[in-house]
Image (cartoon, rainbow, N blue to C red):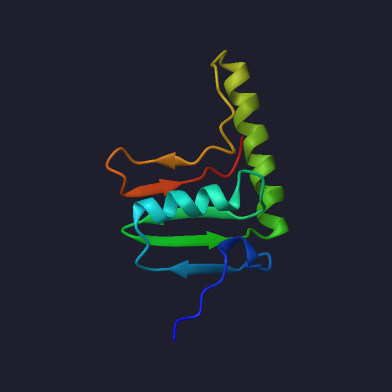
Amino acid sequence: MVATIAINKICLEPGSRIIIPDISWHKFESILQELGEYRNSRIAYSQNTLEIMVPLPDHERIKILISDIVKILLRRQSRDWESLGSTTFRGELKTAGVEPDAD
């Protein structure tokens, strides 16, 4: 017998991750849709393997600090940048997808 559970019912503690093998691209996109855009987890997909992780609070603080430093440097150089923090980047060949850490 195979047990199934809705992906949006899985609760992970900060700093933990779950790796799920044998996930098709179509299933990966279905999972992204089911989880929605506003969540505390990060998603990565490569070679039919899905990883869902929840960063630690320290990771988030460091992420914000580094992001702010990069933004300041870009402004000083008069360079444009665009916030894409909630975007999931998908490979053209539909073999990989990843979410950035910061805006």
